[in-house]
Image 1: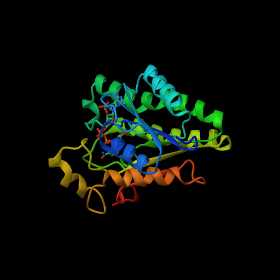
Image 2: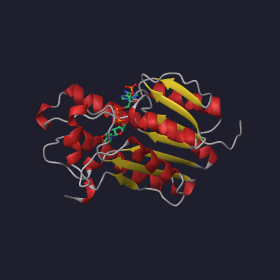
Image 3: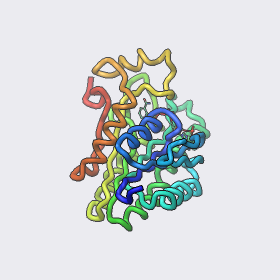
Image 4: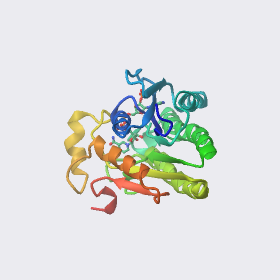
Amino acid sequence: MSNSQKVAIVTGASQGIGADLVDAFRQRDYRVVATARSVQPSGDPNVLAVAGDISQREVAQRVVGEAVARFGRIDTLVNNAGIFIAKPFTQYTVEDYAAVLNVNLNGFFHITQLAIAEMEKNRSGHVVQVTASIVDHAINGVPCVLAAITKGGLNAATKSLAIEYAKAGIRVNAVAPGMIKTPMHKAEMLEVLGGLHPVGRMGEMSDISNAVLYLDSAPFVTGEILHVDGGLSAGH
Ligand SMILES: NC(=O)c1ccc[n+]([C@@H]2O[C@H](COP(=O)([O-])OP(=O)(O)OC[C@H]3O[C@@H](n4cnc5c(N)ncnc54)[C@H](OP(=O)(O)O)[C@@H]3O)[C@@H](O)[C@H]2O)c1
């Protein structure tokens, strides 16, 4: 096993975009640490599965610790774990609020702090957030202020950290998806959701994985919020 082989951590890796990202990184010959509450052990020796709730600091410590112990380095962290609850503002419960902030913000904060501390030792690394295009372009009929608070916060944090670490060799970017065909969406909603996009359809998981891989291989790109959204953020 070569020491120059890169290592990526992917959160929310048990299904959807995260699972696709694990495959995409493996196709580029990265070693991958895949984490989610229900992630299953992999038969691939270059994929380490670490199960746990990413909102918990202890889980983030375990993911980063096991990544370094098993693979010796962390080149890329993809903060993909996230939940989406669309409701009229006054109908959100306190539990909804806590759940979304826990996964989307605490799940970013703990592991990013720990991973960047490792990247600083090598003066090299890349952190990518999977945020959401809808936070830049609210859609009448899709009320989701908790996504706006959390994913909008992550977009802002992306720029803030990109500048803080620009001279430390650590890049920080985000991919802001439109609506993507994943288990997050019910089958009966796909046509309606597709119609919300200027291109008239939803995106594929590979659209997001390809965008993450592009950013990972783009050394002059940092602080970028890359919209992969069929034109959604451009307007209607
Ligand atoms: N699909 C879309 O249309 C769309 C649009 C914009 C943005 N996004 C963003 O893209 C990302 C991936 O979305 P997706 O559609 O692939 O979602 P998904 O199919 O629902 O998968 C979400 C992933 O997050 C993990 N997760 C949820 N809560 C967690 C927790 N407490 N601790 C650890 N892992 C947790 C889930 O695993 P476990 O349940 O096993 O923990 C799962 O692997 C999310 O951040 C989402 O907000 C998606």
